[in-house]
Image 1: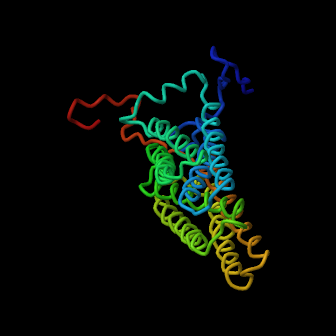
Image 2: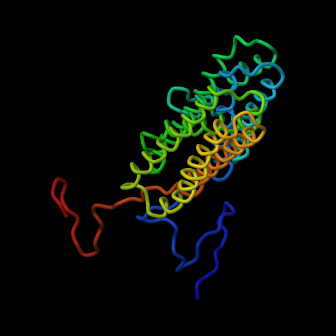
Amino acid sequence: MRQPDRPDNQGRKRKGPGTPSPFGPNPWQQTSWDWRAAGNFIGGGLGSGLIVITALSIAPGMHASALLLTGMALMGLGLLCVWLEIGRPLRALHVFFNPRTSWMTREAFVAPLVFASAFGMVLGWQALAPLAALAALAFAYCQGRILKAARGIPAWRDARMPALIVACSLAEGTGLFWLLAGWWAGTPTLAGLFVLLVVLRVAFWHAWRRAIEPHAAPRALAALDPPGRWLSWAGSAAPLLLVLLATSVLAGTAAASMAMALAGLLVAATGAWFKFALVTRGAFNQGFALTRLPVRGVPRGRPGHPT
């Protein structure tokens, strides 16, 4: 009979004899990053994208301030999720120690610049708009590079990952803009930009999905494909149809604003689900391979000679 799992000296369960180990040569899912890490990418992407589109739009006054504050709140919530994930929260300051090599450090340096410039806009310093937009865009880029730097995760390390994350952040932030402020700040130019970003996002997703096909584990692909299908149809095709209706048949009516708000909600929600699945469900490593195995009874080969 299999012995029950027993805790080791650190409180973790130790497998009894006969218990299959989750580790081995086959790919297994990483467990270091959970929903809290996903929350950073979701909140940070939505917030930075919303700040970019708000800073570049012509939305003036208190409504723009509310949008900027919402973007900062979402980014702050994402960073709070990361802080909660750290086993020893006081070690959070260590993230500032490696700016030359760590994209997490660079993200941490960019975040205060985003907050400062966006809050300056809230106080009325509209000249900070270009700085706020560039800093928020850099924040989203850092998030993409954080994932790409995880070389052991085939679904993350692809060269297209930074572009995909930036496209997701901009599309989802613009979707949130249309959900919150489209009824008063929406313009044909912003509608066209929204369409462009949605198309770019789904195009980058399909390019990335084709690229990881030969390398990612089948279980990773199985976990990533359902949110990918939702992103393609409910998060791309349906919003594009809604935008078409809002700018043609429904133009000038209250239903047009409702259609644009629904389109924004679909883009933001499907993007958040994709990022959650990417971090928590599709993060299988590549496993490992042993090219030479020790065999009992076979003498060890001399240096320079095969066994």
